[in-house]
Image (tube, rainbow, N blue to C red; front, side, top):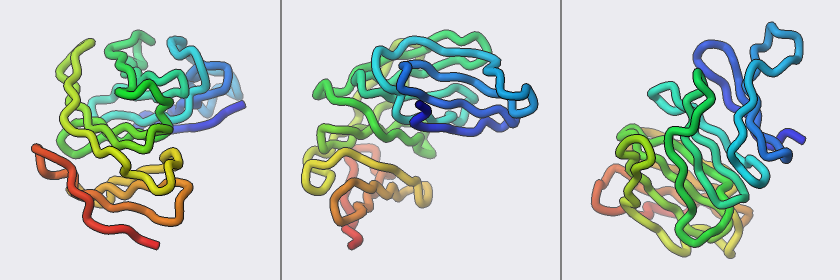
Length: 171
């Protein structure tokens, strides 16, 4: 079963599945995947093409993986701080990656290079009622909207390189 999809600038798209894989598709190839990426050990729940053309994936296996889709190789792999599944990720204008999931927290990661990342900030108890993140939207270069299964969408100012600041809740 396919859980998530993302589109690439070249017209291809990727799908993440319950079989723990990511498939790269060319819509004109009549339903045949052109590449399969393996590295997660549980459901692939979220995909995001990054500004440099790489692909980020998150999974209920607690890992975020950065992929080179040309070679199919893993560039970076890191685990959620609390060992919980990743259900949302978004790249900020700064190139940093925001992840969230089942642990009610938001994490901002600075990707330093291959297999090198630094946790820049953590917002604990960010999501309403201890529900996982359902989706994230970078509203503008400074504002991240985060939706959970709770009754509110939270807005965060992510421009501050020192820490993420909650702006307000929307009901």
